[in-house]
Length: 568
Image (cartoon, rainbow, N blue to C red; front, side):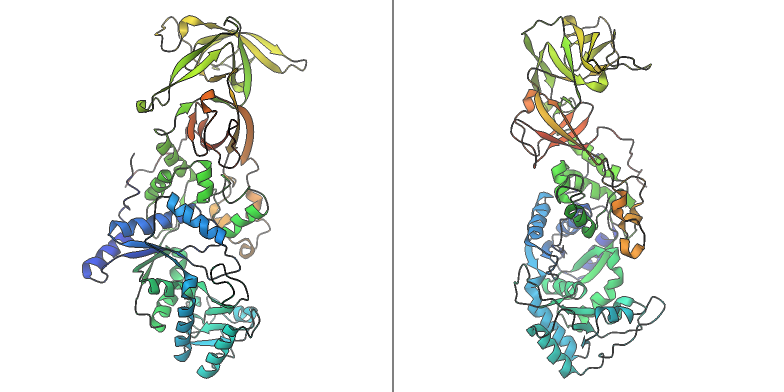
């Protein structure tokens, strides 16, 4: 199945809106933006937003900005800025313009003065706790602040003194003056500026007051001439305030906000706060740990940008909340790699086999296809000699019925090589199998056309004399399968539960084993990808792999029962 996911979006309501806006002349050019806050690394959910904003603008001959919504200096860092740039480019997208919300701090301040002069904003001395307590509920109106009716002159003076640094953190805030009885809680005089004596990664110590995201975001869109501000549905209730800010600050450009359903995956946490906790607690070895749903984690694991874009294409664009099976992403990883990855052999749990009738000191080179489904990938030669390694699970001394691999008296085919027959089992004093002795039939060489007899089992192997020691890092989802995504996405404090998402971590999410690979893999480089016979797709790790001692990350297993849902 092929997806033109890099160049198109499937039919969706946003595409219909844009088509009508261009047709009616409402807009002349489509301008979108991807506006992450640099307070963490991007994750798989962001991949959908990146793909949608860049691809849909490109479809209509428009442009896309990358903008950092850096209005909270306490949580933001240049490290995150750099990682976001790298991730967007790795996914295959490039921005026409790069912006920072902090570049607009002066204009945001001046627009706040416009609000104060119009009687649409006031300085409040209440504490955050008092503001929260008087906000009201979904059924009860809020209560007016005792400072709500301050004069324009007093508000202008206090706001200027806030900027000048005369007050402590939390001592005063600037609030929009809208309606404390509004059925939409977001319109009950939301805070638009707070005091934070903190250095900013972009502006240093120039400012000690910072705009709130919900106030800053619409202004940023308007300043940049964004036509269609695409965001996820949790911002739908904020749209009336978004429009209020644009109108009341008298911005000459009027963007429109449209919401689409976020990408929710089973067994996946995408809360930046929770992901940061995993990093800080040492549960994972960084934001790019291959178990993390971050773009950098997926990249290090070996997932390709093509697989991610095909996946988000298939997920589609709608307003509906839905949860997508993590196995669907695995499906597109396999689809992308099956014709790209060379197929080779690796033994993850080695058991030595001595072929007693093969001449000592002799070695030969056998011909093997690099990818049976892609002949253009050519062939390779692999060494074969008297001693080899096989998987320990491919031998049983007392096998059950229908076990077709090696056991005493049974014959199997070695992939790309010969038939071998097990004759003797060598054990230690405790009864553990140390090695097995076999004989081979030289008439049965792979590719020779031998038809004398059939065997039911084929097993893989590596030549012991030239095998390259390797580490294999086997990954499973970080979250246990039985845990419901909607539960783990809840803020644990709000949920009021004794358990937190940390209680649902999979204790078997990483297993590290030592084995061997073919000698041709001695000089592999980070991000080289392979299909290991019977094991799955693997990627050379960028953090732990060393020359001559490769480390491979399991990207995805070879098979799954997952089926794409039928198209309606």
